[in-house]
Length: 165
Length: 138
Image (cartoon, rainbow over all chains, first blue to last red; front, side, top):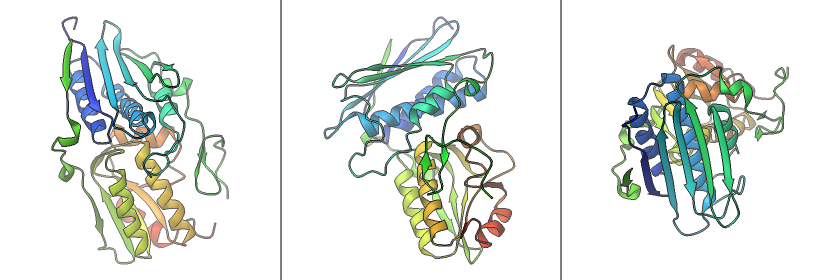
């Protein structure tokens, strides 16, 4: 395990790149001692992090999506980075459909720990850690808030009560 | 350190491995069959297929039985389609198979969308529910 190399990917920040990153992660995780459920959580979290870069990081020109994966004796650390204008929640770009704003809540729920760093104009980095041995389901510590409101749209502030009759 | 530069824009991405097709064998309910991995790259295609399904005027079933991964871009497309279908009085139901891939089940579970969309087991049950116009009219 200690001989496993760090992996760094640099791609254009475009939608078609997200699946490439997911496949690279799957390959890396295959070589490590992760449960299938944790690998599934990693793939979801890294997809959401990359999607945030593709959708939110850059205004006009094609920017760069950087991903680093680094294993140690406790687990796998993943960094997803851009050099864009900083996170602008739920921004729209190039006429794409507005996002639900679920990216960061999903990353928080699925990773064993995560950290968001960056400032406007200097890019953003999401660092996520996934451990080999989980003490519990991270979703229980960071549940995804929100549900679909009466208007049929996702409402991150709505609470999930019993379904309306 | 291993560095890899990937020119994702020209990679031969295997769209055929992730098909989204309409099945209208059920007559008044059209089934949108989603297979493989789906994310922000294929979400526009999913939206097109859902638009086409809604345009046919009957109930809509989205069958995720063959899907192996869906992200929040896909959930966004499903919720938009659901809202429009219900506003038009058309049933809208998502179905999965007996064994659901973790890359599909997990996001449905933690977003609480199973009862909302709703997600049911099996295409036949979903078609019956969509035919009855679930949710239409409140």
